[in-house]
Picture 1 (tube, one colour):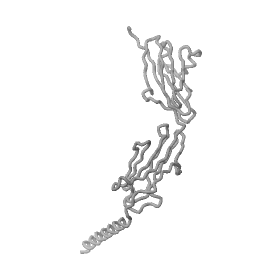
Picture 2 (cartoon, rainbow, N blue to C red):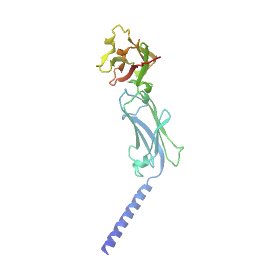
Picture 3 (cartoon, rainbow, N blue to C red):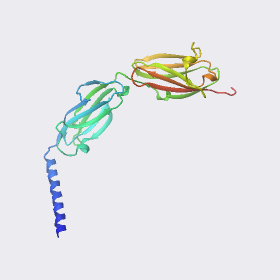
Picture 4 (cartoon, helix red, strand yellow):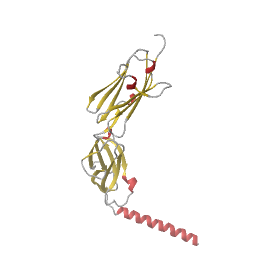
Length: 255
């Protein structure tokens, strides 16, 4: 008898708690999203600048009940969607509003643009306030414009010449600080130390646009001692360099 009474008491208590929670939820009237804003690294401003490699914490804050559905866009393209009801549940809105976060990590050229946060409820898609900010990354590490150029192998007939091209995006402009060759079974050495008059090796740097450069590495009359693994290091003064490599071999046999 005691066990039955105890179990009944527990069930009644749970039911009362559930009714109380439901009543608390009913006390909050449904309100469309409003007062939407975006901060970047705790600052509210329309335009924000960070340097390459830095991080940016974008926080979208919004009022309304129930917690709205958030859509993040960059230059018009959706980059994140989040239902804040899943995070907050149906409870009292925080005094500083519901928030959704989007982080930019290790910023590069591709992270510059206009970020927008839109809030809406499933019941009323037309009532969708939006906030936006512009993030600029004016300086960034050198990167290849075409990742297919990252590591390549070239085979030539002995005595032929070859030009190896790398198209690099960089702000500020980059310079070559290392160009070396490691032949099979030998130590890595500087290309420039092998040919002081640049008769066999030469390098050119052309500007294609404001932040795009074409680096060209010339190999003239390739012979066996010019084959192996070449390494190139580019820098623009920021803390990360661009490391490139390619290899050249000789094709033997009848023509």
